[in-house]
Length: 450
Ligand SMILES: [Fe+2]
Image (cartoon, rainbow, N blue to C red):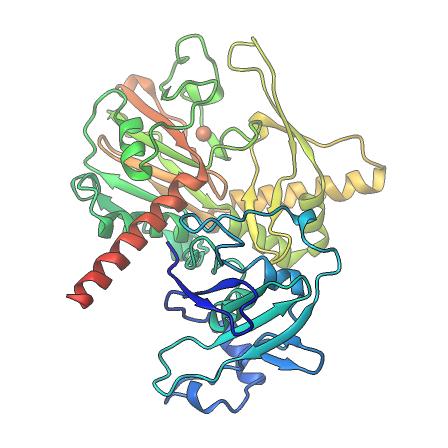
C-alpha cells in the first residue's frame, strides 16, 4: 500500500495529499535519455550518478515533466490521492471521467524546493480551475511519466523483471529449483521462482511428489490463488499415449508434438502451464522449448512487413472440445505487441489448433503465408530450440503466451509415461511475484526500523 502524507493546501481550498513513492531506480534507457537533457540541479547530483531534470512550471502554469513533456491537467488530476479524490484504504478513484470539467485547467502550480537533507520528496502543488488543490510527489510523477509500466498509483512499484530472450546457445540451461524449497512458501524462493518465470519464461521444479492432482495443488501454492484455471480439459489434464477419458487430442497420443502453445482457441489464453511428470519409463519422448519472443524478434529484424502482417491478421483458432461436443473458437493474431512500447506480449502458434486466415486478397494472402512460413521455420530452427528429458518428479512451469513446447515421438512399449497438466492465468504469476517482492521489502523495512 502506498503511504500518504496529508497536508492542508496553502490556499485552504481542499484537502490533498502527497503520495510517497517507493525507492525508484531509473531504467538504463531512461538514464540515457536523461543524460541528454540534464539540468543543473545541485541537490540531485551525486557522485557517479546522472543528474535528474525536475518538474518545472513555466508561464501560464504549464507543468513540464523531467522529459520535457507537458503534463495534461487531467493526467495530473487523476493522480491526486487526496481524500476527496480516492478512497484512502484502496486509493481507488471516487469520480467518473465525465464528472470532471471537460475544460479542466490549471490556475496555479508551484514546485517546492528540495529540503536541505534531500530526503523529503520534492512536491508539486497544483490548483485546478474547479477549485481543487492537489499536492503531488514530484518524483513519483516523473518516474511514472518516464516508465508507465513500472510505476502505479494503487501500488507504486509495479515493475516486472526485464525479459531475457534466449536461443539454444543462451537458454540451454533451463532454470531449476527444488520442490522442498518452493513448497516452503518462503518469499525469497517464490520471488526467485517467479522472477525466473517472468524473465526466462520457464522453470523446472525437481522432486515434486508423484501424486494425482499434485500439479494443481502446487500451482495454488505458487499463485496463492484458490483455484487453477479450468478448461474444457478439466482443472487437471492427463498426457498419456491414449485419450484422457473421452477427450482426444494429438497430445494424447505417442506422436511427436512440434513447438506449439496450448489453447489459442480460448479467450483469454491460459497464461502459464504447469506440467508434472508422474511417471516416465520411456527413454524416448524428449521435451523441447522455444522462446517465441526470440523467434518473433528475429522475424521482425529480417522482415518488418512479415512481422506486421502476423500482428495485424486476426486468424481463426479452433477446437472441437476434444469430443466434438462443442466449438471453441477465437479470432486473434499470431503475434501481439503492446501498443505503446511495441514489445511482444503474446505468441499464438499451433497448427493443430487452426490459425486459419480469412480470404484475404491475393497480395495480402501471399504476404501472410510467406510470413507464417518464415515464422514457422524460425520456430523449428534447432538454433532456437532447447531439448531436455523430463524425469519423474519434474514439474515444468512455462509461460504459455511466450514459450512454445513440444516433444519428440515416444514409444509407449518402453514403459508408462504419464504427465499431468494444469493452467493458471498470467496474473497469477505476476501477482505472486509482487506479493513476494513486497513481503521482502516490508521485512527489510521493519528490520531497518528496529
Ligand atoms: Fe501442449
